[in-house]
View (cartoon, rainbow, N blue to C red):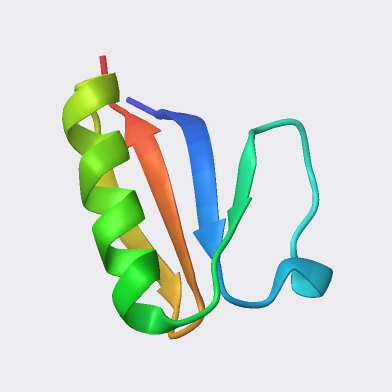
Length: 60
């Protein structure tokens, strides 16, 4: 079963695009904090796309 991308959190906004909300942050620590907060709010899971980008995915 495929999931839906709920949000993207990145330190390199110029490298991402799409229909999901994009949260651009200044460093990797803030990226982790933001992603895990969104994970709880959205009742979803965080997945690392690469070292600069995390995606929050709903698997429901």
